[in-house]
Length: 338
Image 1 (tube, helix red, strand yellow):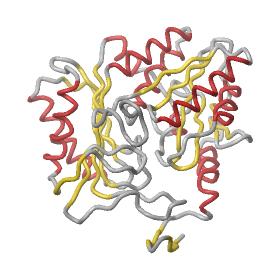
Image 2 (image 1 turned 120 degrees about the horizontal axis):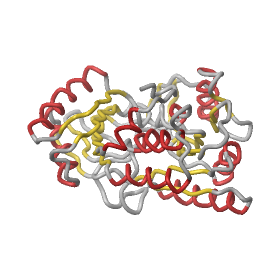
Image 3 (image 1 turned 180 degrees about the horizontal axis):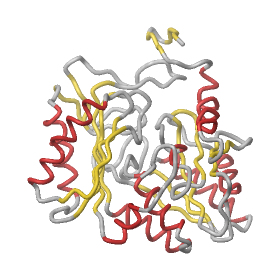
Image 4 (image 1 turned 90 degrees about the vertical axis):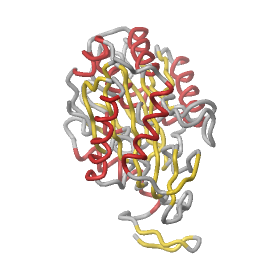
């Protein structure tokens, strides 16, 4: 689809703007019909068949971050993902429908990225569920070291590190742990994960039809979020190594990783070729070794995006032995099959 809006030419492979989120979620469910199901009540993906007797994990947020969050629904990770409009939190009613669909006697834990709309709406949905007798609780992910407060948050934003909370808390829930134990596991991951991102080109929200910000050919944004918002500083173009070092230095200054084992996530923002992500990873591995940080595992690809933003984020997860075991546990989702 190509159209003019506000003097900007938008080219996207979509049909009607109003149908983007629904058609995307339907397509996701049809990609794995034996494992995923879309609810009738909204753009909500649930694991099928429902697994009773375990704590159910629910997450979500605005669309535009694919494969997050629907791509992480499945065995060993999420039981439900609730998608709002692009870069817009789902409503409390939608989240509540998702919670109801997957709730078990063991309870429900919601994993919420720290964006004001997400936090408010998930909190309201949790309260609604509790009023109906569901044993429900939540955690808030705030792994972005770029900012303390932003256009969308009070405190640090929740970004790509969220998928490690899905994975490790999901593995703990799969083992049959209690709600309190799964929540404690999720909070341990949150305390030990840090992320930061940058962009060389913005993205276009379909309903807006124009870029969230503009960059000159020789400019980049450091410290971007995942909702198309600008970063914390605008600078002249850096090389791959310079950009990766800039992000890593900020992350390493925020948490002591020295002598620790970590999982590295080199995350594309949606339009960055794997060629460039591997070039970035080449530097990251050498630099971490130089800094005395031991890499246990590495993930390179698109895991938490901002539609077609060009850029990347780096995430480091500091491991302990229990976290390592849960990270290695089997998961079967569209976006994570380790």
